[in-house]
Image (cartoon, rainbow, N blue to C red; front, side):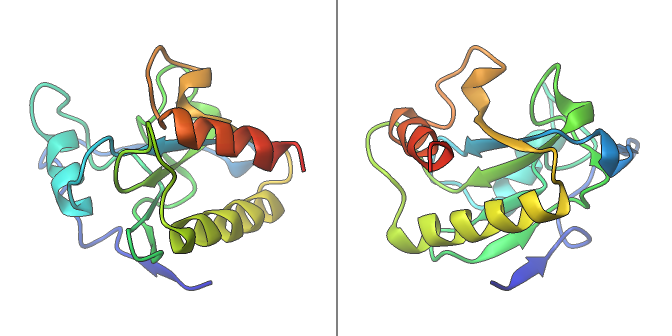
Length: 153
């Protein structure tokens, strides 16, 4: 799997920066979905503008509709993707809305490969849907069910 690092190409807040944390603190990988059909750049712009006003895009990785994997933050970046769990988690987002249907097979294949790679780099990390930590539909019912099955392998 090829990961395309675009961390320095995305829009960033002009006055704020994310902090760093030791990777030894990371014990979870949180899976998200965009909830709509916006681009990675559009998501970054939403995250840095009002009302959020965050330093940058919240996720560490985004999987595009064609299955390409983009790194959007360094692993050590303490981003704001999962309130109350940011210091110890990595955020992986899928472009699109997976409330009722699963992502395309190429997206799921990339997600499996990325999760596997992350668990090698972060051996304490367990995989969770965003809704495990915050009252939200994210990453959608279909995706949450898929993650349940993935975790039971």
